[in-house]
Image 1 (cartoon, rainbow, N blue to C red):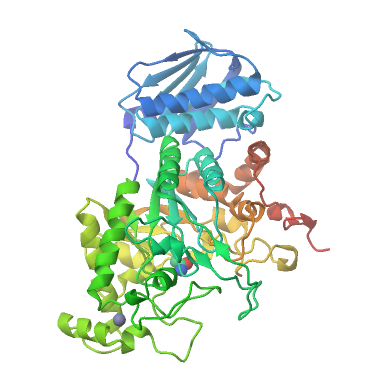
Image 2 (tube, helix red, strand yellow):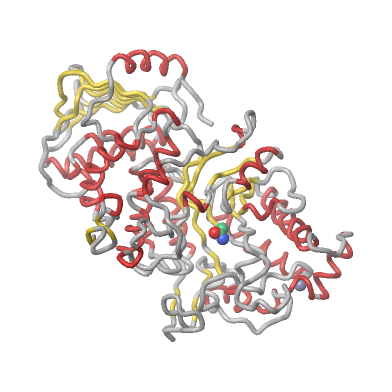
Length: 553
Ligand code: ACM
Ligand code: ZN
């Protein structure tokens, strides 16, 4: 939960209460308090003064802002007084900022990189959308006199990206990060391994990408059993991974890598069949769904493999949290009559026996707890914490794990009641691979479901959470799986503007949300997205699908 500069907040809030936010203040997510007054500040070509105590990373964010303004306005900024003044204010929390624009100039205060990133993103949203275009654009390049204090509701404000089902280049990933930064999200959950492709170079296990990054084809649409026969794949080199991590970090975003285990590992098994219960052979999957074959929990070589993989993961990703997956390990849907490998594998049986796990329907969950706990220990050795999908709660989860509640809100409720931290990503509201309208014949193919913009906006993360357990809810994230998404245009259509609605769920106090005000602000956001070269959905306006067909015709 947020840290507060209480005195400053109280002072500004007192002012904000007197003056309602004007109709044309279109910043998303809406800052905590805003007071606009008569008058405007000429931003183009203004003087800039930067406090010498501001750290280098924050300085870079300020320079990025000034340079975007210079490019868009065509006017050079210069060092001096009376214009923008960027001040280090150690009384503010790391993600807080204050902006005060008056006849004396524009004073921007924060204590760290994140606060300066958010302050400059707010300033950009208050200027004409052309500031996002990277080239000269029409003004006016003025800012209203305003007093803003801002602070997020949740510490964890995530968006997930799936480069496994379909691959997204480094440049495409950076574009995704840019729009996350524009709406003040701060965690990119990067799902790097899957049945359909392993996407992270691991130097100690090279076949993971030599073999595991490539599939022989992809099923066509929803025709189960079909394949287009076209070899498909790709992966990120470690240099590329570091480049993305650094790019995100400069924008206040931590990349949380996911190595999904022990399920969703078919690509790794295809590369190293000895890691599976049967020994294979296995193939990188060409269809969607839940595969039967998973890592063998009875084979010590699997833990050597995981130790090597995570040694390289922690070397590249500085994130405090590493996601270890844990979802959908059992009951694979492709071979309904075949038993789960852990039920019939002698090595897994021997492991259960040595752990004293009794046979029965819960046995697999306890064995998964053992795998989770071993990986958790490995990562704790590096000073890291684990996040796992809510299946890790089944059986007996070791203390210190964070649960990502995706099968609804129940995982988050149970986790928080049992003393675990949780991140809310319920599929009911926050799966952006779901359709956005009911006229699905006009929409590009989606996995199913129905998650329109208003439903995302209306999500309340504390619903169902017991009073007193709220502090365990670290935050909120939306997930965007890409089984049916093959182009950037489609990816962005699924992401936007739902991610903007998500940003208010993550950032704004529950009673500060207002869907009508948000909808009004969206028109400016669409100009911003146009300037950024991003596609978006207008389904909520009755213009359905990529071709924007009128509803009901
Ligand atoms: C998931 O959607 N399988 C976490
Ligand atoms: Zn086994």
